[in-house]
Length: 305
Image (cartoon, rainbow, N blue to C red; front, side, top):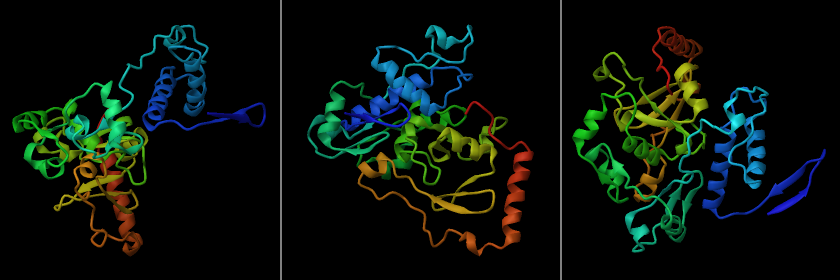
């Protein structure tokens, strides 16, 4: 760790930590930073910095600066539930010590087998189950993912909220937010229905199934739901996301399941993706009108996100 003199009465702090410890620290101060109420005047970045100091002092919560006596954070009764702060995906063989295949640390990326085993020694280990059975076998067989009974997956389609198995699998499939160039870790993202869930008749579309679920950070989740962005699954299984102006971007699954499984992630064929530059001004205008009409018609997925 290095602490140096900064400007305006501030100091600079930097350091080098093992990947798992760094992710744990980031998650822990983030957890404390989220424990204050919405009236706290600080930015999230400022609260994270204050949370680091609170943690070093042995505090169990970050004091809220809203000034309200009835604030839950004043008494330390944070509404943020305690959660696992480090998520690692690894094959059974790696954990057992019979393979040197690397693992995946959420929020960091690839870690070596020794690191994965060190974390597993004191971790709660749960098998990563494949909710869609044989449908995803090509991505999971080499990675040692255990398929579950297909009827469980079919029954889950009628529910709005994904099961724990579905959430874990979807996050491990994508690795981070699905929005182009967004690297928010998957376990810090919402699980979103790519096609909006039909609350009146789920069988008509938007079912709660792996092929219709994906991780989106809160910012991009809201942008997709209310901002006119459209996620499209093509017949060949590839995905593209289209902006309100008609700009189209390919989306690829690059999480630990395809990477650790030894399979090349399914990537869209860029030659078949419409080039936004070839769209006329009138075509872009029409695409925007379609998205606005869909929004005005109330075709958005309601909270909770």
